[in-house]
Image (cartoon, rainbow, N blue to C red):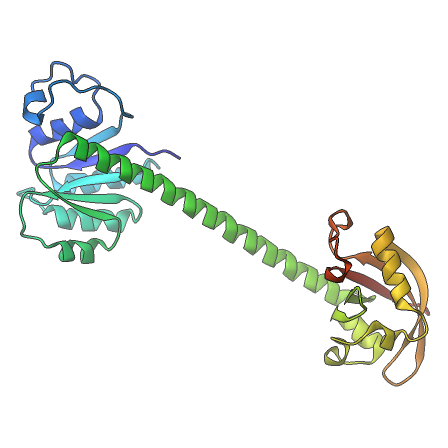
Length: 290
């Protein structure tokens, strides 16, 4: 999103016209202010900015409020420090910062009654201190840089928000899947291709009699000592899935339980990793009696 909206605040009407002539030179030819601004002929060789002028601090603050309500925020504000008889430019800038945390503020003054440190402490960030008089090139460069930075900041905020939204959605999906897996009556085992168990669900704990702590890190061959589970894993990796294969589960108390196993590659089989040791398989275990 490009934002070329600029707020200029100064109690000197002639300077406001200079800002307008420099930033939005639509009718600059023949302007009576060209001599005042030191411009003989201004070539329109830069993007035109949308300029809003305010002669008092309160007027500038209200302009920002209205712009935000219309969803047309300013990218940058040029603010003069002294604008009698109302609030000074620094107080106006402070109120503007409270309204809009993203606007770039350029403090412009010919005086030194406010220090750079004081200005920075009050406005905190995205603030530039400039001395009058500003040349045409300085005004243009400050404005261009501020508008470009505003657009880059927006892009970063958008990317960050999109990432946060994706993480939140992924967390919701993960939470739902964990809840779903936990509620399954079938046992579910995730294992490496070498047969090392990395994840299980409560139904597996119930069927095997082992605790979750015992099962994690256990070899499949301990649970299925008679069935050559490595062959099942190899078929899963080669074919993408293996269904309804009878097997015998050895429980913790030494009893044997007939079960049916189904298997698949964890994730999309079309994107299976070339290194089998980096892949995992999911085995779904159904009690053969039921």
